[in-house]
Structures are given as C-alpha cells and as structure tokens.
Amino acid sequence: MADARQDERQPEVKVALLGVPGAGKASILQGIADRVAGAGVRVGEVEGGRVVRTTFLWPQPLADGSRLKVRLFALSGSPHYNAASELVMARCDGIVFVADAAGERAVQAREALQAMVSNAQRHKMDLASLPVAMQYHRTDLQPGFNAEEMDAWLGIAPGTMPRFATSARNGTDPAAAVAWVLTELARRHDGAGATNGA
Image (cartoon, one colour):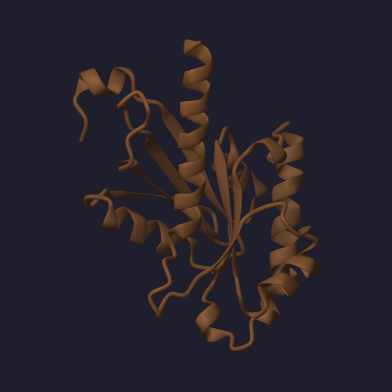
C-alpha cells in the first residue's frame, strides 16, 4: 500500500459494476481483487442482496508519477429497493454494465439498463461524459451469441460505448472492461493535468 506522502497526491476514482442480477459482477470484482496484490474484498448486506467492494492502486503510473486509487463497487443479488443501486452508482467516475449473455435474460438486461439510465437522470449524472463500457459475460455458455444483435435489441447505438464479450471459463479476461474504464480515467486525469499545468 502507498505511504502517506504518496496518498497526498493520489487521485481517487470510483467505478461501479452495474447490471443484471446474477450476471457475475461479484465474481468479476473478486477476480480483480485477487489479481491486484490480494486486495481485500468487503461485503455489506442490503435487503435481498450485497454491496461488494474493493480498493486498490491501478498499476499503471500517471503522467505525474502518482497512481489512481480505485474504489470498485458491485451490487450482488436482487435487492428489494432501488436505493441500493443508487448508492453504488452515486458519485461514480466510470461504469461497467454487466449482462449475462443468455438470450432468455435479455429482457432483464434491458430493464436493468433502463433503471441505470433513470437513476443517472434522477441524480443529474451525465452518462455521456463518463467512461461507460458494456460487458456481455459468460458468452462461452451461449454458442452463436451475437453482441451486435444484443446491442441493437437493448437500444445501444453502434459506437456509443465499447463492448466486451467475456467468458468465465476459456481464458477471456473478465476484467477487460474495468481495465478499459480505468485506462480512460487515467488518460483524462493526465489530460487535465497537462491543461492545468499549461
């Protein structure tokens, strides 16, 4: 962990894993925590679900030599209240929307995506200004899965957000979408620093 001198100039970001209940968000978060120097995972119980979180330093240094302190949150299970989703989403700097690739769960994915957009509007969050990635998880269990068709069905216009199709079993990196969001946040931080220093 960083010492106090590093913490003074360490930018901090919050990233939320949102999406369909049972899509694998908690296991994705756990996998990231395990890979990043054994970062601990904390779990908070909410009625019908759990808020899972971890904190770690993004390994890629920023232009000023500091590193991003990342707070990664996921909502697991099916909480009875929308407030749990809003809490995870509040003041986040980036989002990964996780949907199970199973076709029979497409309606749930669309409902969860609409809920995310509604929550953002209610809290005056501009999703267009945040790095947001789409992750279709467990594609290895769905032969013939077509991400472009699923995007269209969900109402996601081509080119509006990066898409990642991942597998829990065949070596596809389930952390790739989170890595993209963090790389984009680091790029924006470096760009802001260059602008402020000019």
